[in-house]
Picture 1 (cartoon, chains in turn yellow, red, blue, green):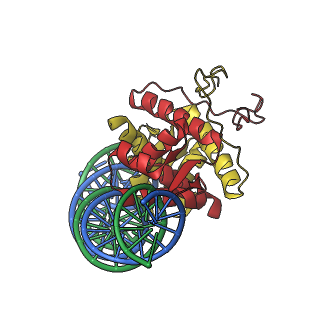
Picture 2 (cartoon, protein in one colour; picture 1 turned 180 degrees about the vertical axis):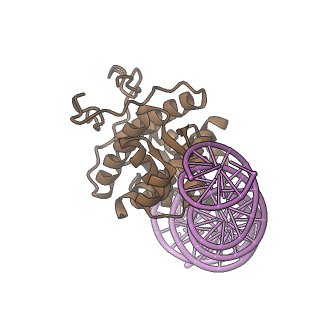
Picture 3 (cartoon, protein in one colour; picture 1 turned 30 degrees about the vertical axis):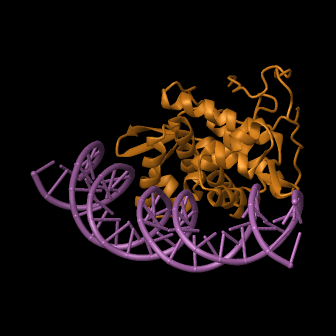
Length: 119
Length: 119
DNA sequence: TGGGCATATGAACCTCCATTTATATGAATT
DNA sequence: AATTCATATAAATGGAGGTTCATATGCCCA
């Protein structure tokens, strides 16, 4: 099942503290490597390595401008995914969960699990 | 920043192929360890270990019934998160992304990144 | 074209964690 | 009470990946 493994790889790529911080910064605005390096106070090579990993998962893309290379999210929904995930996780840690009710047949709630495509 | 690390830990917990498969099964219905073991065709101790990891992140909870222990998701939104994430990742792999436009001030789109709380 | 700045790459190290093997706990059944 | 079934736990192993250090690439400017 390559799908599950791709998805797992994707989640692990996001699920690394430094990369997650990078993504949260890129959710606000495009940033070049130097900015990320100084904001996060990490080694430049480390930031480059992580950006490479993010790029290989198509999470991030680059744009070169003179010597500098600017990075941004490839997709606006990534920012929302991260925000959703953070909020949910916080509630889980506080044990404020919404009971699961396994339903019989037929998804009566229309379009519940969809990706919303608005800006 | 413990929040980022908690979130990263949460994502990594989901981002392991076997655990992700477990979660997808639990998104359908409650399952006991034996069922998970045979469906996934993995060692029973491995499944137990993974269930433990999921439980420590409050992603999963247990209910004992005689000798069997049944597991389910702690929160219905987890199933949606996983579905959303899978769909988004598939599109990213196909390079079908929705351009990011960094906006100036004021989140005009009402409540865009929220957790929806319906069933 | 030489030198400095910005970023990328490579190799080595080390830690974390998934998996296996073996054994323990604990409930039900006789 | 002993046996069997279902699950949990502990220790050992192996591999993946995060971090650092050193160096390479590439662009700009004098």
